[in-house]
Length: 375
Ligand code: NAD
Ligand code: AHE
Ligand code: ZN
Image (cartoon, rainbow, N blue to C red):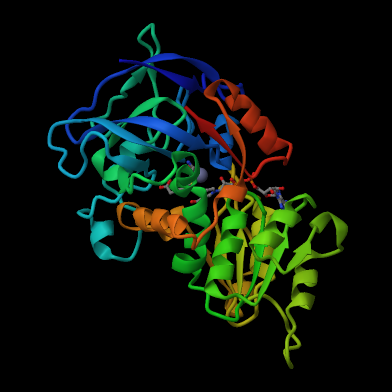
């Protein structure tokens, strides 16, 4: 079939909206009609050329929601008409990692996924002249239709609005999951969140749900503070306006007879390795846990004095908030539908596919939290 897609032809160039060829689903695969997709900073990271795994031409997008149109041979858990959220972290429930119960990082198809291919080593997308187009994070939701492995689709209730629940495909789950699954934040905790964008705001939302007492937001853009306050931020620090961000946070968190200060939990949602260091170093001596969410460009490395770890701080990371996609994503959709989590205010812009590059401009200008493309 043919479908319309925004294609990244080369690194650093705007996406081009065009008709592309899409082959039908093979064994274990599912054809879906994408109804809506968010634009995450990770899409920009790859579009810009900063992703060491970036391949071109490709169809980016990994934060979608849609409807099953057709299933390939052997597919048993989905049928046409089902509503689904694509998963860049699949859940096969059979690989060593899934069976370990210790991680959400299913390994069943990671190798081919990282090479922009379906599990059989080929692509389903091609240009009208036959040139193959790579898949992205196994999802490619910047297309009106896409083909995905069955194990990479979460079946969700069919009364949930696509233009909101698409955000659960990455940002919402990553932010809230980082708090609940990865950090395991307890009631009364103190926390700092670096980067108040589409991920950081969901970390703040997760911290409020977990009962954190002090939630310090950190961003270079003052405009991000207003929305963060609505989601539960109690204090704001703009690093460009203070001598030392770490010292500010330490001062804000000295409680009782504690002369040391520092947050119980910190989160990097910027992707900047210098910020990751600050996030670790503002966490409390003896027990502070710092979670890296941000994705850093090719070649970037984190550093700190080992003494920071010797004195009890813990550096962790999280992908998709530690969530097991097929199991947890339908629950996030229920939470949203039951009013337990908020999504609507964070979707600041809704665009058509033809306007998708404007969504990237808004991100760069710091004007959007999430721009969503509706098909
Ligand atoms: P975003 O662009 O919406 O937000 C980033 C925020 O960080 C912005 O508000 C920006 O002003 C702020 N910022 C940038 N540099 C800063 C600095 N030096 N100090 C303080 N604030 C700074 O991006 P997003 O969609 O929220 O994504 C955030 C990061 O998380 C990206 O690196 C993205 O790739 C990554 N991410 C990771 C996962 C995962 O599973 N680990 C999932 C989604 C996104
Ligand atoms: N391709 C990058 C890695 C990017 C990365 O870390 N991706 C996160 C999800 S970001 C979603 O917005 C992730 O899930 N990582 C685990 C994995 O297996 O990719 C690089 O640096 O090579
Ligand atoms: Zn993402």
